[in-house]
Image 1 (cartoon, rainbow, N blue to C red):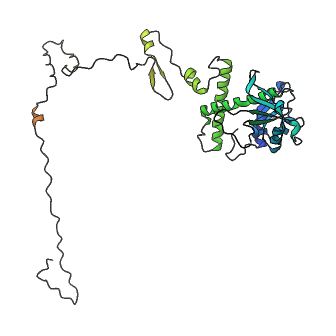
Image 2: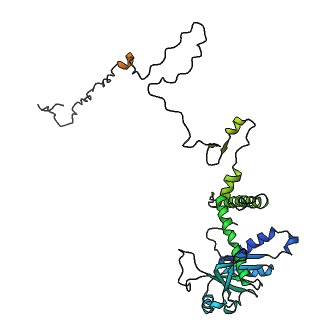
Length: 341
C-alpha cells in the first residue's frame, strides 16, 4: 500500500485497510478456524486499530508507549517480580527480563482484556541510553489482549515480528529503495511489481530451496541462483570456453587467468619483427621478399628532407579612404599646409 509522503505513521484508517486486505487473501472456509494475531510497533497502537481487531475477532499485540504511568509502575516493581525472557528456541535469555504491569496502568479506554507487558535488558556496547532509562536498563512495553498465562511466551511472540524488517530490507534490494516515477499512480504499479518479486522469492525459498539458499537475501540469490553459466557443449574444448554474463558486467571466462600464470617471454630488441607468411611463395617464378631490417633507421630520401617552414602571407597595408572636404554654405574652407586631408 503506497501512501503520500505526508501521511501519519499512526493513521488508524490505513492500518484498518491493510488488515482488511490481508484477510481478503485467506480463503473464507479457513478464515473461521484460524487464530490470527495482528502485530505492529507503537505506531499501530491506536484505539481504532484495536477496536477493529476486536470486531473482526482478531488478537493484537502492539508496541506500547512508555507513558508516565508505565514509568512509575516500572520503578515500583521489585527486582523479584522480573522473570527471564525467552529466545526463539525456548531457552532463557542471558540478557532480558519481563514483567506484567496491567494492575498498575489504566487501560479502561482499551478493549476489555488488554494487558501491558514490559521487558528490560542491558543495551549492547556502544548504545546510548536516554534519561528515562533506570539503572542502566532499556525498557520496551507491549499492549496485547492474548490470554496466555506465560508472559515470557507472549513477549517472545511479539519479537518475532522482527522478520518484517528483514523483508523490508529485501524489498529495498529488489526495487523499493527508489520510486522511479513522479506520478503517484505509476509508483503504485511499481510497488505492485516489487511485491510480485517478493512473493516469487519467498515461495521459491519455501518450496524449492533448502540450507543456506533458503534463508539467503535477494543479492546472494541473484548471483548464486539466478545468474548461472549456460549449459556446456558436448565438445571438451567448448566446455573450457564457457562464459557467464552478469547484468552489471560483461562476459567473464569460467577460468580466469591469475597474476602468477605464465606469460609469453618478451621479444629481444634485435629480433626480427613478425611478418605474415607470403601466400604467393608456391607460385612459379615468384621472387621471395627480402627480410625486414632490424632496428635500422629509415634513410629514405623523403625522410632526409628538411621541412622548411611555409612562408607567411605578406602583410598588406590597410587602404586609407580619401574623403573630399564637405562644403557648407557660408563657410569657406581653406587648406592649411599641415593638413593632409
